[in-house]
Image 1 (tube, each protein chain N blue to C red):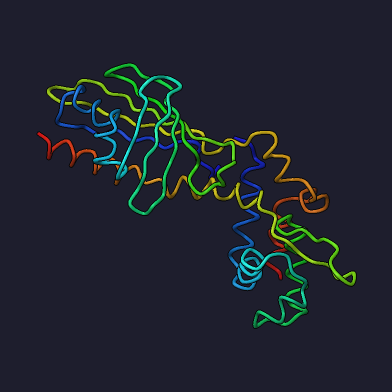
Image 2: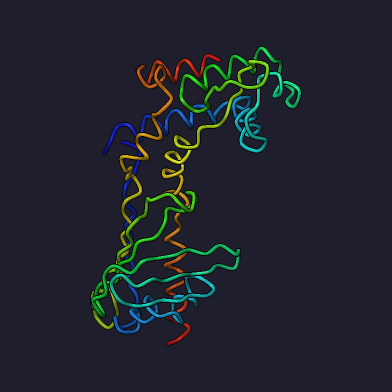
Length: 143
Length: 111
């Protein structure tokens, strides 16, 4: 199984949850450390957008807002076309730890493949996918 | 974990591991559908070798054969398997370590 579905990181931050929360959920905070410019409508279903200095922008949809403990949003999988329906879910969890915060970020959904995308990946390919994977790989390697 | 995603990604990466197939796929991606003859004129590869690779790529579902002018078969890149493989690359390219470092720096600076 080489195809990971989620990324998970936990960091210890020397600042209280309220301050970390502001950095994660305000346009000012997000624009300072994450993107170069940000806008956010902080409520479930609200939209957010970040622009990076490269000119790349990303649209997010706010999903969970439980101040100052849980902030979740979905965004598009980087590199896929604009109209691709697949999105990953990012969730920040803030927990007081001493004078600071234990901050956890989990991004999940990388391995999702909706039915239509599944069909698209297989259509027009009657012969190839019927074969065993090893056989096909050997076939390509032999060329 | 669906086995299918793995299988599709494996096909794409196996195809991309070979420089000749990379050149063919790159030419089709940048220039659009083409016949083996068209590709032979643009790449330093014999028409025979190109035809052989195209047949293998078609069998693996990475290019699609379609009727072209004068009944010549044209090949086009099939983007769906590429998008599946790209999901795998997206995991590798998502740099939460740098982002969290930047967040920590931002918080420390503002302290």
